[in-house]
Amino acid sequence: MINITKLWCNQPGSMDKLRYSNDAHKRPVVVWNSTRQCNLHCMHCYSQSENKLYPNELSTEEAKHFISDLAAFNVPVLLFSGGEPLMRHDLFELAKFASNLGIRPVMSTNGTLITTETAEKIKQVGFHYVGVSLDGVGQTNNKFRGAPDAFERAVEGIRNCISAGIRTGLRLTVSKYNYDDVSAIFDFIETEKIPRVCFYHLAYAGRGTNIAKDDLTHEQSRQFMDLLLTKAEEFQQKKLDTEILTVDNHADAAYIYLKTKEKDPERAKQIMQLLQLNGGNSSGQGIGCVDFNGYVHPDQFWQHYNIGNIREKPFSQIWQDNNEPLLQQLRNRKSLLKGKCSICNFLNICNGNLRVRPEAVYNDIWAQDPACYLTEKETQQPVDKQHD
Image (tube, rainbow, N blue to C red; front, side):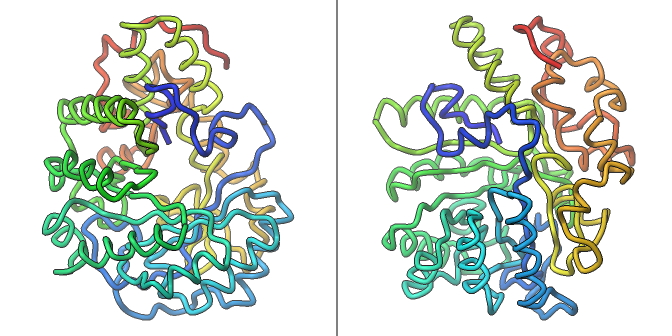
C-alpha cells in the first residue's frame, strides 16, 4: 500500500508501524477468504465468487486451529475476506477468537449486509477496521457489482458502521468503468466523513482477467495519480482526517517521489527512506493468503497456485518453507525480472510490482509489469541512496 496522505502531505498514518519497518523477522498480514459465497457478482472478482454454497470450506474447529497457529506465529493482522465474509455463519465467533488471541481482525466486505444490528456485532467482537468496497457512485457501482441496489445498500452499511463507532473505509478498484467517478467518490467521502479510502489498481486475476483490457492506460494512471495528490492537498487544507492510499501498483511510490523531488528535494529524501523501509510489493513475504478450502497462496491474487494446505501442515510451517519454488523466487525476485523492471532505478522500492499481471498478459511471471506507467526515462532517473 502507498499512503499518499503520509508521503505527499507528511501526515501520520494509522498503519505506519507495520508499513515502515526494517524488522527482517516481521510476520505477514494474512488474508483469509473465509468463504467463497457472495451475494453479488463483481466484474473484477479474483475468487470468481457466486451466491451459492461451496463444498469443503473450513469448519469452525479447523478455522480456530488455523487462527491459533497464526497467533503463535505472531501474525499481526487477519483480514477476513471472501466471497462475502458476512455470509459465513461463524464469522463473529472466529473474529472474537482471533481478537482474544491478540490478532487484529479486520474485514473486507461489500457492505450490503451490514444492518444496524450487524454493525453492533462487528463492534462487539473486536473488528478493528471494516473496508467496504464501492466501485463507483450509483449505477456505476451497481453495474460493476451486478446488483441494482448494491450502492444504496453499501452506503447504508457504511453509515451503520460509522454510527457504531467502527473505523470504516472505502475500497475501490479503478478501471475505465469507473475512472470518471473518482471525483464523485471524494465528494462522497467528504460528505460522509469517511476516514480512509484505498484505491486498488486492477489485478488481472479471476474475473479480473476478463476486464484487463479495460484497465487504465498509462496516461490515465498518471492523471489518476495527479487527481489523488490534488485531493490529498485539498483534504489537508480543509483539515479533513482521511487517509488516501493506493494498492497494487508500486509505480505510484516512484511517481510521488519524483514529483516531490521537483519541488522539495529534502522532503523527497525522507520519502525515499520510508519507501525503502516499505520495500515495495510483498507477495509471499509481507502478505499471504489462505483460501476457503485451506490452501495457502503467496497473496490473494495467486489463487491458481497453491503452496500447501493448512489441513495438512500449519500455516507457520508452510510459510517458512524456503524450498517452495514460487515462494523462494518471490522472495529473491530481483535477479529474475525482465524488461523495464530489471533495469529500473526504483526496483528497491517497487520490488517488481504485482507479478500476476505479467503472467496474465505475457504468460511470464518475470516479464515487466504491463501496468507500470513510468517512462523509461523516469525509471533511469537518479535517486537518493537506497539499501539492498
